[in-house]
Length: 118
Length: 112
Image (cartoon, rainbow over all chains, first blue to last red; front, side, top):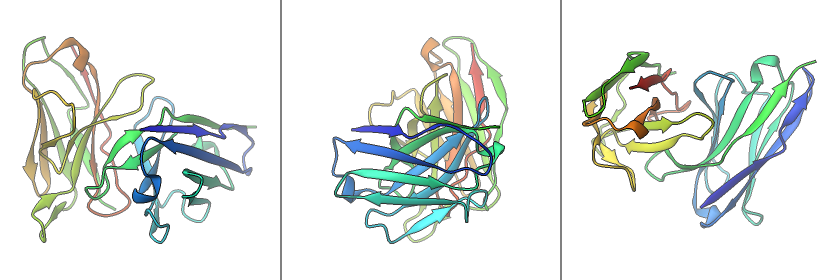
């Protein structure tokens, strides 16, 4: 199992960024997926999840209306579109595979840093 | 949202001794239909992603040494490391996945 995030970087407040998570080593279309973030020196914060077929989605209140999770099962890729970015969105963003037991995550990517600053 | 509170924030334990970390949820995470607690424990080393240790409150994830154990039900949970090894120095997080958002505790830093 491998999860590789990309698309991070430096963006100005109010700007947009799209993160990608390329999955391999498992049948991507069978698994729910999550995004979790971690601000520098801080704890883990769950951001969003999506069902294997894309029909069920949830978001943390802090990103609702600004972030959009999506997936392309043909490309084995999970996405996170982030709009109206704020300084407090600065974090390492991890994609994680759902364990299949209700919402915990058994495999994680190495993470990608998003920095929101002028 | 369900609030997860861990205690203590940091903990120092001697090698070979027992380490105990507590996690309390603001509401029950016990799913009555299957009698499972939707509570996980993770270990995170600096610069690394989290590693799943325990799911459903007391089930060890694949490859996790048996010195790690989880217990508790409802709102009160414990992660125990029976005999601390040097490689167990890390930050530990609990997470509820009973209902979204799947909130984490603030983390507990474990030191030698």
